Length: 294
Picture: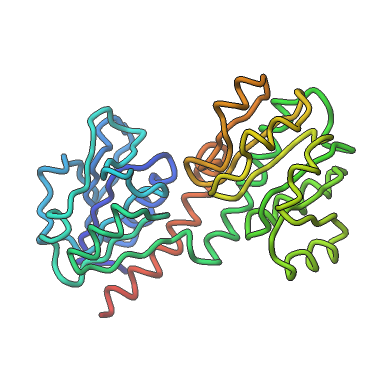
């Protein structure tokens, strides 16, 4: 049980509902920031504004999957009031306080470092990323079906990146009958892609392989689908960018050229928030058990 642990959950989407449910079931004391419009009540959880939080009694802070913006703003689905996490808030926490986030950025890293606190990025864990790839794949399939007028079967599908999500997406689209080519820079990845019966290519060849693409799925959180690449694509190509914001696509040029390109990070929170929330909650609870034992 997590009795006597004081946990502050700051912002988030429907995935956080499962996190709240699990934490209250484990007898943690939970304070919710940015949940004014959440009608569902939880025994053991109270709603507060961030200015009302007693950070000196906070053992853990749980941020959304997206963490914070570059200026410290925290996204939330259940409030219209802006929420900003500031360095001084973290400095007021006990020394043992841990900040949990999905991902991080320079702002959050800097605040945590100056406060001399521990930051855990849950989505850097292999187990979370692999489990999370399941609803990501389902959401990607859904969006491709909704935004194309041909079947996935026999489509020329290009997947950019062969990390944990890229591998799952490639396998699923191949299973649906797509002709899958996977772009990477790793010779080891190329060997694995070949072993899976797919077609690998080096990312430096991207300009030469997009000319017949029906679907392009990007998982690389860096500029990869630039204007010079997009200019070589057929006008009916559908781009779905599932990398972390801001993605790796030049959306301005894609729109100018008339190519349908969508940025879709956080698909699990859209298509399967309950499952995605359980994945986060289960790992988070284990982390909190470790914190409680310190």
